[in-house]
Amino acid sequence: MSAPKLHNAMWPGLVGKGDDGGQEPPIGLKEMLELTAAADVNGQKYDGIDYFLFLPHTNPEASDDELKEIADMISGFGFNVGSLVAPVWPGTVGDSAMGDDEARGKFLDAVKMACRIAGVFNDHGVRKYGVIRIDSAEFGIEKWREDTRANTSKIAATFKEAAKIAADHGERLAAEGEICWAGMHSWKDMLDLLEEVGMPESLGFQADLAHTYLYTLGYNAPEHALVQPGYSDEEFYAAYKTMTDKLRPWTIDFHVAQNDGEVHGAGSHDKTGKHCPADDPNGKLDVVKCAGYWLEGATERGMQHICWDGCMFPNEMLENPSTWNTILDTMVKVRDSGTWS
Image 1 (cartoon, rainbow, N blue to C red):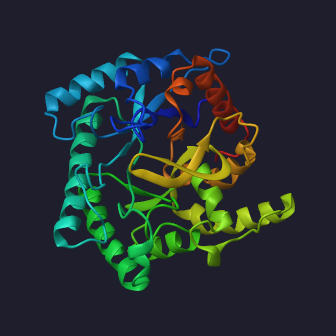
Image 2 (image 1 turned 180 degrees about the vertical axis):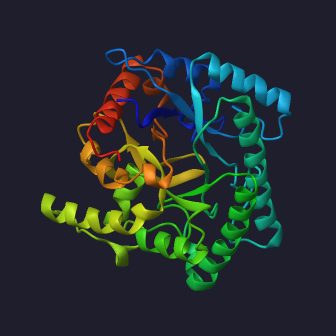
């Protein structure tokens, strides 16, 4: 079986890493590619990578020639590039999607940069599918709660402009559902935002198994909790169906992941869904079964690949070859489960 294509994310080498006290150093792009290329499960290899468009992996202002060199390096490992992550956050290129005019202008600049880079990769041939990922870039929900309706409308207005930019470049945007991003921090608030944008052909949802598990618990929005602690399997899957039935029609990008029910963070990226190893004994999810809820009808929504996300793994784990074989084995099981359609 050759569909969906199996991708590994490059950003676990960057997110939460840095030079501050207590932080581990970033892992370079070439090393992340080497670790990914070394994985092998009964002859099955990764088909490609998903890619964060920021330093130290990529200068978002790199010239076309510099970007083509990166594309050559990636394709030299036999990989396609799939989805790209736009540098929409304060401290990168962008700023808050619910900020003032200057902040929202920076957010849109980041989307324009991502679309330009996508075009270079597409023309090169290393990229043939995938989306551009965004979120509200408003960290935490306190400011959003000051006027929930107005702030959601402000994010939606920014997203509409971003979606128009993407459409003009032949791209689609996927908004990542995660409890730390204002206006996107619960399944219901995420759905409300997607519906207010109302441009499903240009802006959809990115579902991550680790993050959306916390949606069911109502971690940052107790009023939207679908299960309570001590839930039974029957209660959980009924709740999971409720959530996925609402968000699946919008889902155009998908992350395989595991979660232990805790939140985690490092550096400036704090209190978000904790990604766990694929075989973590504390993992709360039947990864293959839960993935199936999201992947029903995936090809009808234009999806051609799935990606593993192991954000904020310690470097020792990232640099251990067995980590990637275990992950790849899990992704093969997702692919071969028969839920992809």
